[in-house]
Amino acid sequence: MTSFRRTRDYTIAARHLVSFLGFIVIPTLVVFILSGFSFRREIIRLTTDQRSGALEQTADSIESGLQELAITGSALMNDRVIASASLAYSLTSSPNERYQQAVLLDSVFNRFFILSRQLGSFFVFFEGVESPYVCRNYAGVDFPLSELNSYRAAGDERPGVLRFVDALGNDSAGSGSFPTVMLVGSPSPSNAKNTGVRSLFLSFVLTDLTDFLHQKNDLSRTNGKYQSISFLVGSGGSILASSDPASAGRSFADVKRDMGAQFLVMEKPVNTPQWTIAEAINLRSLTQRVDTLMLWFFAALGLMLALSLRYNALFYKQIVNPLNEVVREMDTVAKGDFNTRVELSDIPELNRLGSTFNLMVAEIDLLTSEIKAEQRERIKAEIEALRYQLNPHFLCNTLNSIRLMATITKNEAIWKMTCALMSIVEGNLGRDDTVYSLKRELRNLDSYVYVMKVRYGDAFEFFTDVKPSLLALGVPSMILQPLVENAILHGVHGLPRKGSITVAAAVDQSTLRIDVRDNGFGMTTERINEIFAGTPASNRGINRIGLYNVRRRIILLYGKEYGLAVSSYPGEGTVVSLTLPILEVPQEDDGFESARRGDEL
Picture 1 (cartoon, rainbow, N blue to C red):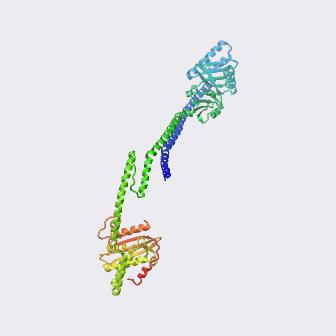
Picture 2: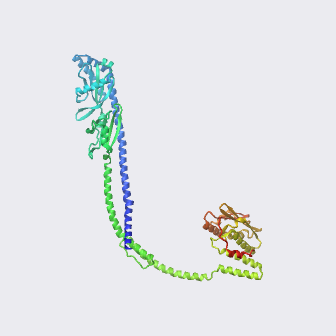
Picture 3: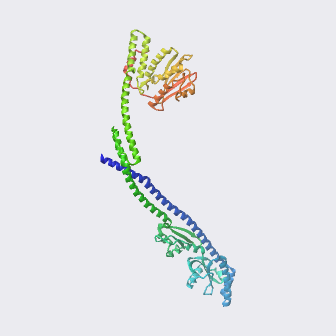
């Protein structure tokens, strides 16, 4: 018994701990983890939407600037003033004249610099002139002649077309490095004869591109990696420029593979040179605060769990043990020992529980003693009352004696009256669930009607409309007598014309329907509604108590799908309909049948 109680006590504490973990700790952990992941996902989504929109605007701005440079280069290649000055510059051999033509070219190019407000350089190669003409509006580093010759050769490949070089120049000025966009081209052969220009090379600092590559990318490292990196990818897939110098010149696909899932990479195309600008954001830099909060939460959760274990131990010691003591004393009380009492606790609630338990046990002990005394007195009174109760069997025996005396004295009226009353009394001896044949129930009705005719004379006639095939069906004992009684007492009694009562039966599928009809006073719909509504009936009308009991008896025996219904018309009569299941009839009692033989009324 001791080991069992200890196991049960431990189970209470364990259940308390499991409940605490299941309803507080684990749900809190799940909610916080889901919230943390949701916050991370939402931060990434918002950052993606924000940076993707900004990246698209940057791509549009760079695209617009490149198109403007392309248009400018094409215009310069076809400008008449430049063409005339260029032709004179290429044909003259006089230093003085060449200088004058160079001044004219400078004025044209400087006008472009003033209008466009861009930093750049123009390099023009003339036929028959070894060194190119150069015009720039900032102090940039000169390109080596070998590099310029390579650009001139690239321009000669497709005469009449001005195209972007799939690379960036690195002119530098002041304190910063400015990547430059380069275009090369050569006039068509016809224009070359008219202008004397062999090829044209332009190098410009595109402000939007420079800002993109030199934007504040928070280049402080997170876990040894940049937080944000900008890329300009050429048409061949190589990185032309980047805010991370180590990635310049590498394949962009390789760089993305190396970054893996730790970076969020967004790309936007720049269509004119078939370039791509991209930005890679370190996801750790976005979710660092959320991750830190989650670590703090896990630490707090661990502390909470340790405190909960300590709380569970105190709870077990100070609350569970006293409760178990109360349970043990309750088991003692359940065995009938009302002298047990529990010790009071220092905890006010448990002290109140103990006091209430002790008071309850004392009151139960007192009430039990009183109940035992009252029960003895009640049994004594019931035994005394049983002595004065009428025994139905004694009544039947007495009536049988009266019948024999009437036979001896040859008083037929008394004999018939006694037989009819005996039949009624024998029918009432059955239980509520006793099932008789419809034939026997109708014979009991004959006896009852005979008695009522003796009482009221020939004020009514009684008929039955039942096919012989239905007489073997079963009905509850004495179920029709209250209905016929209502028809006599409240239907046809006192009628100025002769009354008529008919009992009819019919079978509808699996249902037996029995109607008790009379041609009496009838009643209104309101009176019918009062029958089962609990409204007191008046002096004339149906006995609602009898009808209520009949319907309640049928429902209790067979269910709510069966029962009793009343329909009536004032001055025409009333129909009470019973709905019963098709019942099997037990074998008729031989004593009853033998008693009935020779006793027909």
